[in-house]
Image (cartoon, rainbow, N blue to C red; front, side, top):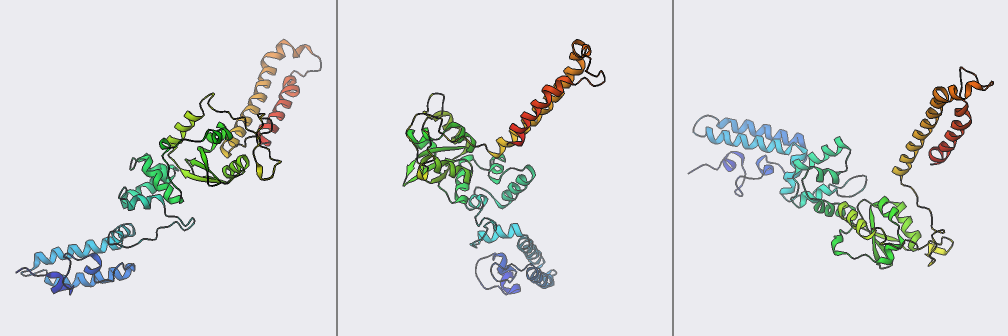
Length: 341
């Protein structure tokens, strides 16, 4: 009759064979003290080695290997967390700064990702600067819809399939195409005194202020995939499809919309941080080219054709066009597109 090495050598009562790692190392369930785990392993390892010679040498070697595997798993934080989860432990993996469970945790619960893949996603996100959501999709570990559902769970929002939604035209008319493109969102309809907005990104306060200004109502965000948002914008905001003439009367209490057809009273669209930075860079480039262009014209074209015939223009520094046109133009562009933005 084969010997029960777990019971005879380690004193483990009858039960599941092989026992779980905690029972094998004679630890309390879900022990987190690494030093204690190593101490128990070392003690048991020395005890089992006593049986390494004689009739039970093979059994002794197999058990030593099991002990080593258990110790290596329980002293590796990532592997231990995965093992503990498989043993029914509820892991508090909420982000300390946001209090949310990351989307990778939801994908891990669903069996879409493994612990090793979660670590790969984190490494890829840190290396590339992408978000965790985009990293999962780029690594082709899950499709965009599955990731969007997990991301919605992280944010505590609902997920919607825009293919099943029919937006309200009157709501669409109130939000211009420039705004929906800027925020990657799509207005759907008014539900329970809130404007339902499908978003590809986490909504910020600027978008909430825009919606409140245009409707006089707060918004409620739901999540959709970026591709679905872009396709819906192309469909519902095709040229000639929208009547974006509904004006905002900010003088009315609560920012209620007016029914006038004129667009002159609409609040000017505010630029996003990216658009501001882009305009600033473009303004700097224009300033440089204005100054450089005028200087080149002064020195290599206009001097021979015109400036050298004018007595007060110095031959060593013929910067007439630059001084009278280039400098004012550069200052104007700088104030309007660089300093003013």
